[in-house]
Length: 135
Image (tube, rainbow, N blue to C red; front, side, top):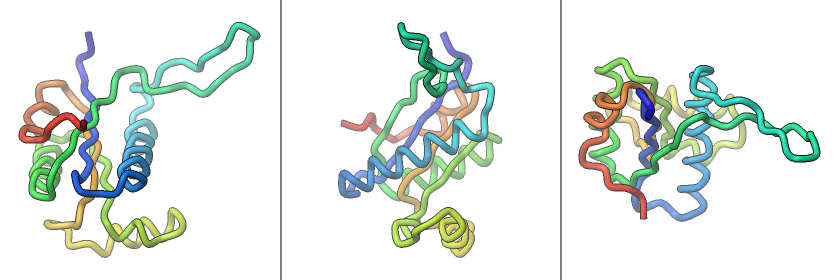
């Protein structure tokens, strides 16, 4: 049904609140970077408007650090849209500080706790190989 796929991989040993927080941030990264991924705004029976949502399912996976890094590398090599969240971002309080923390990470081995990937379905599936659907 969809030519593209959205996958979010979250570090499997995070606390529940951290998993939810990382997932929410990463979903906004995909939505913000891919206007064509967005559906139309919602309107209820009374005519009230609601924000648009992503127009396709988002699959959530659990992964260990090595799978996160490998999947990130695959996504970048394949030219897929990729959003990333690093561990140091848990200690910041705003967007500018998040970007500073992210930029301070080693480029080849950041302390990833989550990534989101969007692109052609087959390429995304190859990139996330080894990740398991989140329970």
